[in-house]
Image (tube, rainbow, N blue to C red; front, side, top):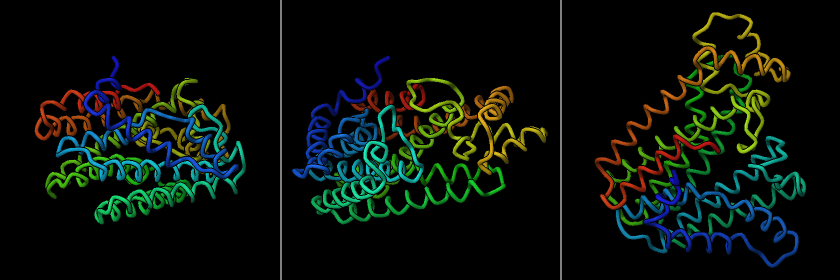
Length: 324
């Protein structure tokens, strides 16, 4: 099913305007800077976050220049964070394309990330909406905190579902939450409506990250990362956390500790991945997605305009069903 076409249908014109302005914001006359920005522009992507922001704005009012600048600010902030994350993670690839640090070097990646972050702040300043400026500034703080929380969790010997949720709330869910909130704020929605929109975005973000984590247990070139990549980076995600906490296998717990210590090898990762599948970890993660989805669907049923319900439902269905 072509979910993306259904999502874009009511916001086609607004998204075209957004993409044009986004590419313009990621352009520069200087040689090296333009080379790097051009490399980043080529990633494209499905624009899931700005689409959610546009839908949220349209649900509560009319998309305006304020909305566009809010969307630009958020997507540029997200882009800058990805450039910096690849440096921190020493990643050579980002969704099938060479990362900036791999194509150029770490110094260039950090500086260009800073340039994009500053551009994000400029775009929200142009909106002249102090609530949007404050929200995006706080988002940047939360995302940084989330990365630090994830780093500290690697050395934490506790294998906790609660800690997992804390990390993904700050790393991923907050981005989708901000999309929904900023869209509503940009058109002058009430505080109550903004809070409802934030909750919907939070649920979408939790589903998005859990789905992303499930990918790590299956081999697919389309996804852009090898099976067990999270474990190789010292991360234990929801499926294996559930499997470990519902098993008395000391051997598997030993392997989990090796993940956190960074001493696990590829063969041991394969064993832990198979154990997770056999112990119901994937099924459990899917059930948790369904719980968040039920709450998101309630928002669609009760708070979304009739002419936008199909687009919102397609968005939710896509996040649950996506394969890349």
